[in-house]
Length: 436
Image 1 (cartoon, rainbow, N blue to C red):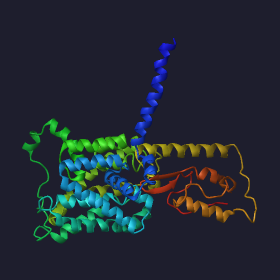
Image 2: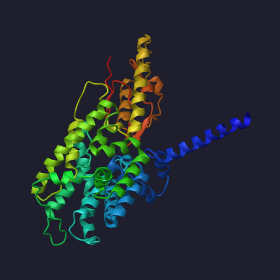
Image 3: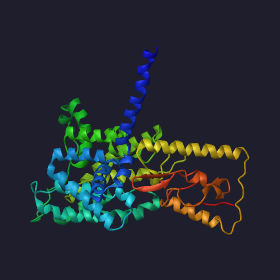
Image 4: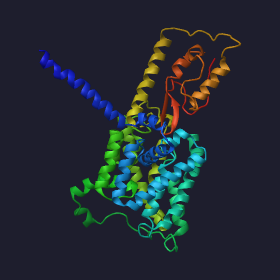
């Protein structure tokens, strides 16, 4: 009996060890991020650069960034070098400008530099290893944090991300300023697209295998590649961080963006994301024809415009729940956030239905008061605390809401510190509405 039961006892620890080992490299590799903070600056920069490379696909994982860099290197080493240089310069520029260090360490100030570096090399009419191209690459990548911060100041009023708008602006600016006949930095000649749709004979000759291979090719084209093998390596990098993002990346970048990343994944948000992907196809066709008239590429303008339009949708359906930008993470973490929020709502509802009234705030000239309470809330919501205020938060109470429920943990994801907010609070505000 004991011998038969012993293998099951041995399999339990082995399985848990494998799960813990996989957890170290999946998600956002939070433990790796904490370890990197104690290392020299060179190691920290290496981690931030690879996270920036992965953030193009909304993944905050340095190992995923390393795999994506390897796929670009296999496509063209010159493109990979320009992409890494753009990421490094953009990240260092953000540090010099004094941007939020958590955002920098998450790669949020590096991914636009990645695309700027790669696509400037892709659209250059010069052959590979044209070293003079590094000069405009460095300059445009250096300006990336400036444009990112400027656009964030505007987009934050609607709690919207800037996506790759800085990359679109800077690359189109560079190509419009140089053109195809520039003596030092000539660009490829983009001719007007009179027709983007294939002829009937090409549709009839289309094979199933070509349709299947178009899926990884479409993913690889985000980084300027055109090979299914490179796209498969990029999908592997996404799978390592988040299987949900990997699945939706195969369906379409717009669908993967909405469903699970900025919305909690439900069948309603999934349907909304598919509609957004179809809408993005129309926008791509229109913008490609429009931009080609000016000899400019479409870049990611269609994705940015279509996704921003759908993110501005407001709905009274509880299942269509757009997450506050300050708590957006990878889809699996977003689900955990939603479960914690529902548990907090349920606990508060049961407390209110039980008729329990909270004790009034003690009048103590040396202790905290209501104004101090609101000040602490402002610190929490602005993302500058990790619940270590130095005060006894359990003693500071609102009517029907205590700080012990408010500061239930800090979440650092995609470069922003935030708290798990209780019901009736709004992420991004700098105060609670304290109703008397």
